[in-house]
Image (cartoon, rainbow, N blue to C red; front, top):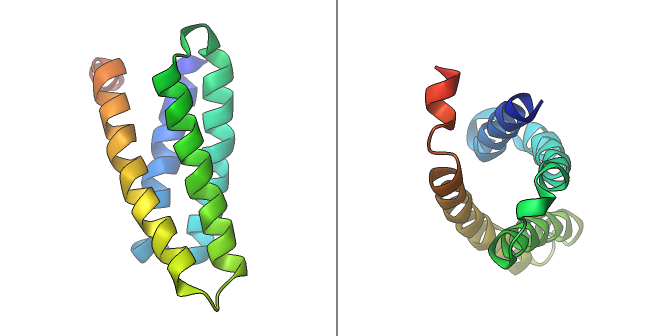
Length: 110
């Protein structure tokens, strides 16, 4: 179950970051699925939740909320700029998270 969840997280994350290829509507759908899968992922691994992982969840939530406000407040382009900056930070933090905690994950898949 955890392996399937991790694979789904990876697929939804890849689709989310491919916004220039897939379009904004697919990006919105994939980011919503990614947020939902992230919450399920944290509930499954909650015994191991440290302050760093809690901070990672908070940054993902802030990125999602800033994206929502970027959609709603189109007349203020700085909100979308803030979303892009936070999203790049989330990308880096999630790459570190995957590398540190799941270094054998990709070997098991292949």
